[in-house]
Amino acid sequence: MRDAARSNALALYCRMATPTSPTVSVVIVSYNGQRLLASCLAALFRGTRQPNEVIIVDNASSDGTCKWLRETYPASTVIASPVNLGFAAANNAGIRRATGDYIFTLNNDADVAPDALDALVRTLEGASKHTAAAMSTMVFAHHPEIIACAGLIVSQDGVVRDMQVGERHTPAMPPYPVFGASAGAALYRRTALNDVGLFDPAYFMYLEDADLAWRLRLRGWETLTVPAATVSHIYSATAGYGSPRKSYYLARNRWWCLLKNMPDTLLRTHIPAIMRYEMGAIGYAITKGERANLAGRAAALRERTLIAAARTHVQARSTVPPDVIAAWMVPPRLFAETLRERQKIADLITKS
Image (tube, rainbow, N blue to C red; front, side, top):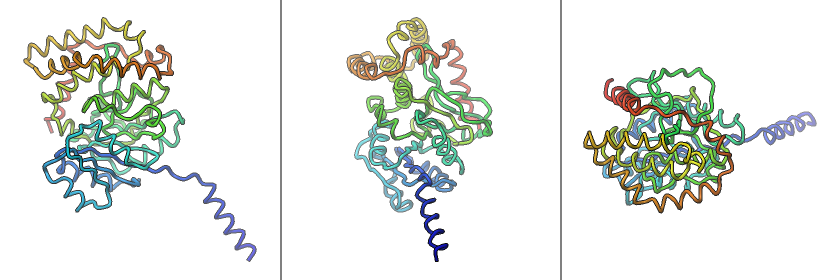
């Protein structure tokens, strides 16, 4: 009896002494994306690591998404917004509802490989407590051997790009540090989000994750990319690659992102590079008749007072010296190189 009691006590001690696994909440934003969600959720639930909860925020879709979700995935939480909140605010609504220690933001046009979420969780568990996020390696849906995004990279001219786009994917590589995560498939530590805040709803869509990456960096948080965590991505399935809507928000939010977040000394140092890129982008937009691009830049100019107020708040909370941030910023590309990369992405999207 004493042996049995000792064994039971030992078993109880082991259970108490074993650290509990962190809980994971998945947040997915969708807008008229039922056809995409069917594949996205099926892939997610085939995973070796099941999330503790799945929250889908529907941005006033007209395709029956909410009804379909409640019938097909009744265990999931559906937040039905009566209006289109945009990607940033809708993600925030999901994150505020979430209860997990980790928040996995996932695009509805992304399919998670079976072991991807587990690889992200294990990476964040084993990383420094100052690691805010673990980024998956997103690959093109029709070219799964080619990287679509392995994190975010920032140039001295303020341009934020998808890292390693067009390069070969090597899943066996160990995790490595990057400037920040793309919210298309990223696992965030809740304590990091509590520290810097959620996505800025002013962005509506596009570069809100770059803004969050900047704010995390300015507070000393790190980010890792995990090559073993593969996610297949249908690039810009909702807004459309090169669409006027996307062009507008990318042009507008570029200025929100760099003016809000780039430290004073770096802004002064790199203003020539920033303006060289800007002149090239404006000239190209005029030549091609891209009115949405120009309208986005004009909108940022009108909103300069709002941007300045946001900048004051962010810079006041920064705890990292500018030279540490500067080390993450890469030399600018020629504008022609940017155009070639855009064409490469377009080719990978359209050619199966």
